[in-house]
Length: 164
Image 1 (cartoon, one colour):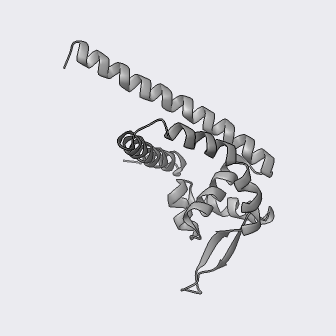
Image 2 (image 1 turned 120 degrees about the horizontal axis):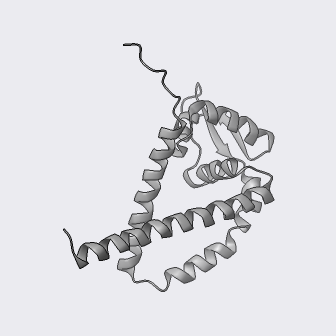
């Protein structure tokens, strides 16, 4: 398809991509500031957020949810335990397994830092219809899933060239 409709579509897609980059940068800067206030790296803070949002999980599950390599999760967990942010506990059903959970005391301080952003975002949501919010929510969820998959491809160990 060529002509004004395709040009308009290309412009809209460009606007979405530019907005995504802008939001990504703003999110990284915000979460870096939050992490610094908590004495964490940005990655440590986001993993703590995953544990808070999804509850206790195994290192493998955390690797899948974050897109981080399993070896990275092990080192990360060591650091989060040292900082009293998360802890390893026996799996509630299979005592041979270990799950990672957030330390509740960490949440008390952490959650308060998001209050203003949540208030402002809730006000922004009030300016959209339910249908628009459903579309925005669907897009953001799918975009986050795509980004998690892209992260996983970047964190996979590089394969040595084949000797064929």
